[in-house]
Length: 482
Figure 1 (cartoon, rainbow, N blue to C red):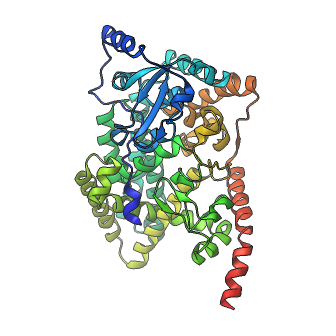
Figure 2: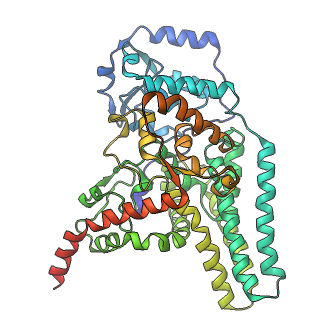
Figure 3: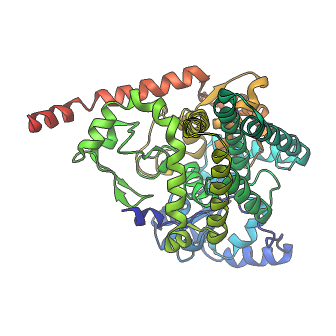
C-alpha cells in the first residue's frame, strides 16, 4: 500500500526554470498558423480526458498532452484534473508566461467554440490577473525576505540561548522548546512561499533554498511537500483526488468517506466500512483533533522519509535530488539531536522535544482550518464548476488585523492564495479586497471568512457532525463483539 502512494511525479505547476525563454514572435506565429488548419469543437475535446489521451484548451488552442503528461513537472494529476476542458484560467493561475513556448509544441489545432464555455466570472478573473500583473504583484522583493531572515535567526538564537546558556531548568526545556516551535512555524511559511516560487520567481534557486529551509532547518522534505500540496491546489477538497482531505483512519471530514472511496492520488481504497479502527477513531475525531495536531509533525517526518527512501517513488514523484534531500534530513536530525543532548537529564530532553513539537502544532491547525470546514466535492472539480467558484466554495479565510499577519504567514488569505497562487503573500490582503469587489460582489458570490477561533470552532463542528454519523457502524461493531 505504501509503495502505491508514490505513483505521481509532482513538483509545482508554476515552473520558472532558467532554461525557459520567450519564444520568437515569428516562430510562435508560424506554429499558430499551422495549428489553425485543424479545428475542433469543445464536444470533441471533451472526449479526450483520460490518461494517455488528454487534450486541453488554453486561450482557444487545443493541445494534445496525453503522451507527455507523465513528464509534466506539475504531475499527471494536474492534467487529468482538467483534461477535456478549457483550462485557460487554471493554466494562467499556475504558470508564468515563459512556459507558453513549451506548451505550443503540443498544439494540434483550435477550439472553435471555446469562448462559449467561458462565463463572466472567468473573464473577470483574467482581467484581474492582467491588472495585478501590470501593478507588479508578480515580482520578487528581496528586502522583504531579508527582514524575515533576521526574524527567523532571532527566534532560533533565543532558543539556542535558552538551552545552552540558561541555568534554570524550565527556561531550558520549556522556553527554549517554545521558541524552537516558533522558529519552525515561521520558517514553514517561508517554505510555503518557496514552494510556490514567490520569493525569486526562479526555479532552481528556490528549489535549493527550499531544501535548506525544509529539509535541514525543519526536517520536512520539500520533495514530499511538493508531491501533495500542488495537487491539493488543483483539486481542492475533492474526496477522491485531494490528499489534504484524505486522512483515514484518523479523520473523515465528510460522511461520504464512509463508502470506502478509492483515492486517485494514493491509488488505494480508503477503507472505512471494514475498518474497525477507522470507525472508532472517526467517532471520536472532534475530541482528538487538537491533541493530534500537537503531534502531527512526527507524521510529516515519516511521510518525507517514506518517499525519499523509495528510489522508484522519488522518481515518480519528481524529486530532483533525492540523495541531497536525505543528507539534509540527516543534518536536521544531527543538529536537533545534538542540541537536545546538551540538556542535563532525560526529563528536560523529553520536555524540550514535546514542547517544541506540541507548540509547532499550531501550524497544522492553521493549515487545516482553511479547508476542513468547507464543502467537499465528488470527482473532478472542473466537471462541476469553474475554477473561481471551486476555490471560493472550498477555501476559508481567517479574519485578522494586519498586525497579526506575521503569525499567520499568508495562510490567513487562503481564498486569495488559491485563486492567485503565484502572488507573494505580502500582497494578499490587497488582492482579497480586489477579489471581493471585482468578482464576488458583481456576481453575487460569497467570500468565506471567520476569526481564528471561529474557524477552529467550525472544524470542530464539522468533525463532530461527521463523527455522529458513525453511530450505525459502531452499533454493528459492538453487536459483533457482544
